[in-house]
Image 1 (cartoon, rainbow, N blue to C red):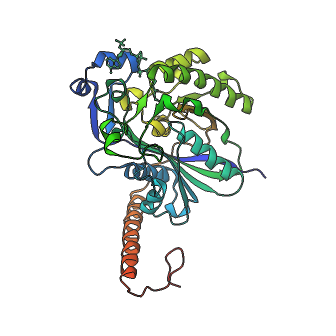
Image 2 (cartoon, rainbow, N blue to C red):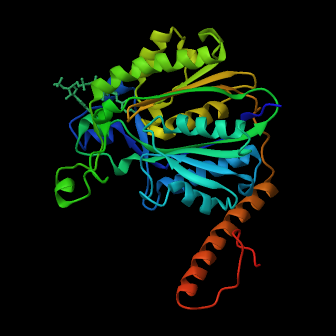
Length: 380
Ligand code: UT7
């Protein structure tokens, strides 16, 4: 019997702080009119002090788990797609694993530019179909405000912060992730990149002075590339599942620029009502843009069981990818209050457990004898 990876939970988190186009026009030489007409963006959300990629990822993940009605201990795999991890290592996925108390999960980060979430969902779905895992949490989360050059008007107007999460679970009924199509072309690596901070150009006072720790982009070239691959990746994934463009219920494109979305719609000859867009409210949140849009579309009732949803993205690398999903999950009932309280207690326990583990390691390093425990922290 074949196993299918179904979308059973979804959630998003946007930080509270808003940055409008008018706010930006006080920072750099730009205007609300220029930003709206060239990008469609009206405002974006930015992190507040203390918020990070992992903290936003956890909040989105909690919502997705609530919809899936699953406990973090049931997760087998966590993938966090991001270009703005909390640290180069350890992975943000490990921080999320710890904060959620997902004590059975394998966890790793995935870097594929703005296409990262599509890559991540593809990896997780294939691991589920292969029978390796039953339940996977795939997150796209970004704190792009920390790598945005706030003095460069050609990039700073585009980006925002946020996180989105999807829970995939194995099922024997047909549907879920039907096919994926992924691609890359590293010859375009300097069209969209962050030059310094890796081993090729380690951080130094020169790299900081030359602003090489910020996003550098050839906007026009990325635009041309985006329109081309949005069309080809969508067509490719449809061909894999033997469906036509007319059968698409909703297309969820990477939310980078309304003009790119409109151009893709024209080139695919798709009516605008079949294309989901929220770029006006959130800007480009890179890997978070598709899971945020998918969650919002589901919350708004724009996706119903039986619908064919196509997600398509492009990004740094260069990379691109598309996913075909047959939606099988109806909108969930409101979670009873007692279950929400239990869940909150679980998360408090996870934080306490993490603290105690770190404390016990510290005590051990001071020579205090530890009680022998197994890998899950139980006394032997
Ligand atoms: O996740 C993937 C991430 N990246 C993308 O998706 C980016 C794709 N590219 C784009 O979205 C567009 O290329 C941009 C929005 C970045 C730029 O729009 P454009 O229509 O391609 O503008 P442009 O780069 O051709 O610039 C046109 C003019 C230039 O002035 P001159 O040289 O014609 O005098 C720019 O200096 O607009 C100027 N400009 C601005 N003016 C006011 C560039 N940025 C701004 C700004 N405000 N913020």
